[in-house]
Image (cartoon, rainbow, N blue to C red; front, side, top):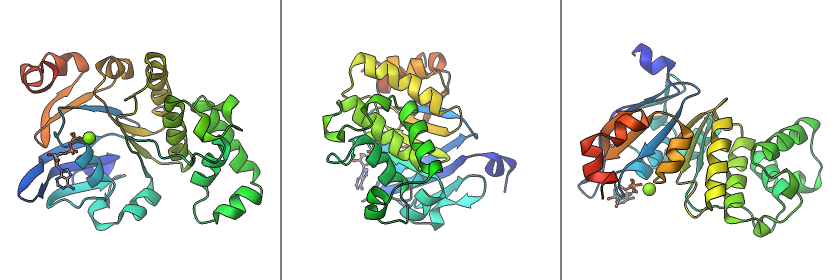
Length: 250
Ligand SMILES: Nc1ncnc2c1ncn2[C@@H]1O[C@H](COP(=O)(O)OP(=O)(O)O)[C@@H](O)[C@H]1O
Ligand SMILES: [Mg+2]
């Protein structure tokens, strides 16, 4: 095993997966260092979501290596085991519990093995309360803690869902198109929020909003036809003629 495998939070090498003969992921290699935030761009159908499916165990690759946290071979575990090991994923559409308060949503996310009832009605420990307060602050939801999730704005629901991931204390967060449908000010706030989260988590963010990507100010990977087309600073990737041809210029 190479040094890179053992020191990386995420290591994909030569990964391929086909659906009915169509190669959605094609010899994909990507390495994320501990604490790194990476932005993933690329046209629709490039394989961005499928890559997240592979990292979270939803889809098994046909070939290639996928390691998490150094030497954990992700391909040997199922989705729930991988989530428990510390990979949290936020899907495109928020899936918060609308009829519960913001705070209870966080508590539910944190509950793990305990039953929902005992979490909601049985009180909480000092540590749990501290963690909830911390997450409420990070996600800008402190003043909304007692409101029903149903009454949040779309952007705030997205933040709550990110908070629900944070409540589970993952090492790596995967965030798929977080600012789709957000207002400009919510989008700008989301970039700040993710930068704060990235201070002590590894993060992979898929987005199409290039202003948002610029605000993230991190290394960018452009996927195309299931592999890496270009990688580097946003300026170098966005001035790459191949990236312009398949994505930015369209
Ligand atoms: N479960 C699946 N079954 C069949 N085809 C799929 C499946 N998941 C993804 N694909 C196909 O793989 C390609 C990549 O999709 P996706 O990863 O969703 O791209 P992106 O997120 O970059 O838009 C698309 O052509 C899509 O139709
Ligand atoms: Mg997608």
